[in-house]
Image (spheres, rainbow, N blue to C red):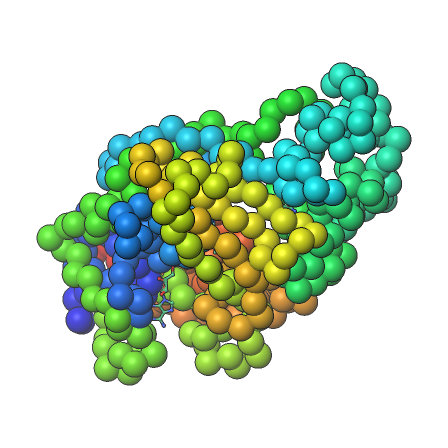
Length: 367
Ligand code: FAD
Ligand code: UDP
């Protein structure tokens, strides 16, 4: 181990780092406590052979040509633009809110300028935008906020919109036109053979050794790598010495329906005000597979369980900064990824962060 780099976590952060460092000539050992690679982006087949995402729907989108090109070394792509409807007042309406959402919800027939004028009338201007409530109220006003955002957010985070930083709700734009795509990024596509196959190819390198079902906590005191890359939760690494950082968890309820080819007209339906789950995703929309049945997942937010989401709010950021100050003193360890950097990162942002970190590590370990 002395001449190797140890990488903790085989998700996007760890796997991209592993490949970059192996390509640069380093020996790499990558471990994960789970029995598979891919982290939360791992995909597999359900019992009837439909590709599913066990840890919730993962839709790839990016504006970064660099990230897209890097991943394209390891996968072909299937173009896919995600669309989402929200069930509100018994109707299925486009989210992000667009012209059609407003016209159908209120029985109007506004053109784009009319929608812009409508939003100007209902929005509640804020002097400064600090919280997610500020974001939503200042863009769509109180009624649309209550119908589309307040309930969903309460369910998803166990918090009010006013208790979350602006960046959370700012992920969802407001539109005056009819664009009903969830994302508008330049590159929107799914790995043609799935995420797991892409990860297998990223990690397929003579300098990379993969060891699954291995918890860093168990081996930490026995190994002496020349450098460590850590992509697990940052508070766990430091033994929670400044207290636990909250991570929101989810319970995924997967179901295969063999008596119907399709359940819903789009990839995801959000339920801001009904049910204990936030959304239902039907995987065949994402993957383009043909099958006589269909496979879906419902997401139930939970306080305890595997860490899935950092919780963006000022007091958590303060605590994270204390951990960060500590890790900046650890010159033999690099912290990267959604859990280690405590950032609400999408997959492409994690790839970008890992590519950047890999450059630093290569520089540091130069003979
Ligand atoms: P992870 O994928 O969490 O990988 C970290 C790995 O470290 C895990 O496999 C874990 O088992 C391992 N690990 C942790 N601690 C230890 C330890 N002590 N020892 C050994 N191993 C350890 N992003 C998008 O771009 N589009 C989407 O549509 C999208 N949808 C999402 C839906 C859900 C429900 C969730 C939760 C996330 C979604 N994301 C999406 C975000 C995406 O999952 C992340 O950006 C990305 O997977 C993070 O990669 P990572 O390597 O940082 O972390
Ligand atoms: N959100 C909402 N209503 C929706 C969709 C999103 O209130 O119909 C809010 C909610 O707080 C959610 C956040 O916007 O957590 C980000 O949504 P996104 O779909 O990006 O969440 P993710 O896919 O990361 O779970």
